[in-house]
Length: 170
Image 1 (tube, rainbow, N blue to C red):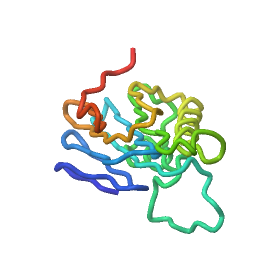
Image 2 (image 1 turned 30 degrees about the vertical axis):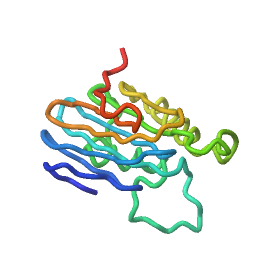
Image 3 (image 1 turned 60 degrees about the vertical axis):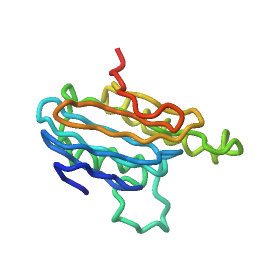
Image 4 (image 1 turned 90 degrees about the vertical axis):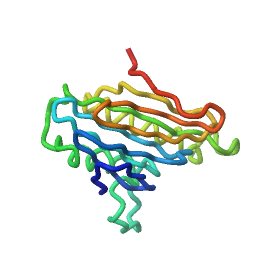
C-alpha cells in the first residue's frame, strides 16, 4: 500500500490511499481496471490497479499484490479507506476506469480480460450497493487515470485526447 501526500504512481496489483490531500495516478491501463473509492465523510480516497477479474487461482501464492484480482481488490480497498466493517456506503463514491480491448483477437470469450474485469467489478459493487459515479470503460484505447484531493478531481488521459476532467454521472 502506498500512502502519501505527494503524487503516487500505483503499479499493477497495488493500492494507494490518500487522506485530505494528495494525488494517486495509474499510468497505462489497458485491459486492467482502475477502481477508485472516495469517502466524502472522512476525505479519504483509494485507488486499486486491478489486473484480473478473479477468483485467484489455487497455484497463485502472490499475496503482496492486494489488487491483482478484482474480487479481492474491492475488499482490500474498502479496508484501506476505513470502510471494511461498513454496511452502509452512503458517503462512498466509486469510479471504474479502463477495461479496454487492446487486441482485436481478445474481444470475446475468456480472452476478453478487460470486459470481464469491468463486469466483475460492477457485479460486486452492485451487490454491496456502492454507487458508481465515475465511469469510463471499454473501447480500444489505453488510459491513464489521476485522482486528487482536496478537489476530488478525476482526470483521465488517452493518447488521442490528452488529459480531461471527468464529471460525475448524474
